[in-house]
Image (cartoon, rainbow, N blue to C red; front, side, top):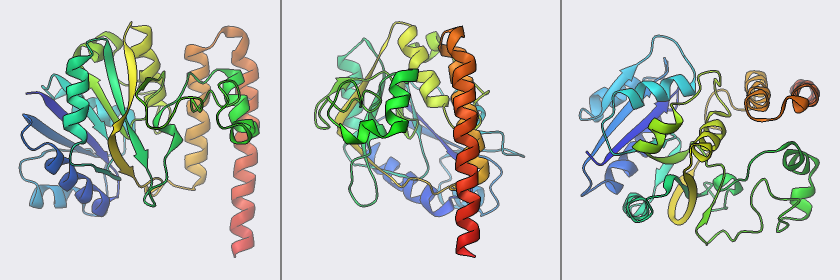
Length: 286
């Protein structure tokens, strides 16, 4: 078995079907297996997979246990030399897997590889390649300086803006929307940290792969479309709390102790302001 694909789904039945169809097409000629872990969807996602994709391994959770935990369930039952973590709201280009696997075979230092992502309108998504989110790097991003100086290696280090979109490069952080993992690197770094419920688990694993001595690569010739924010959690208060909670967990795990308190305080302020803005917007719309 060369490739094991793991997709975690939560109430995105139609997008999941589209993702599976594109994945199967892209995997033609590759020894592969697919596991879908359904996080207690109520929209018939599990039934759709069972009825229309009988060859896909389906794991149905009784409760929504979070993205990281669900990914780990899928990884534990997989057997491929490479594990692909794929979001259900994606479409994989027909040649994406062939290019990605060829790169991994030709670069034994590669622990993981990511794709060039575009949204549904064809716009490049800068989170396709990211640098380590140090406090200064994150400050430049949140302050808007990264948008003002998009090609700056200092102000837009978060998105590696100085590195061209169409060139292969090493990147500290890859996105979990498409993350091709070498089994050996995953064994060295460990599985996803289940402390992260919905955000930050890909950043954490990417950095642990780097710390284990492997490199992460951004591959521009590996293309996927990512329809962001299709989960029912999108634009919700719960999403904001999970996102900010993930930032705090990452800071405690990977930043020096002197940064823990200031980062937590800053993130708490950001969290409260975003929730106030969200609630205010809802009131205005009413």
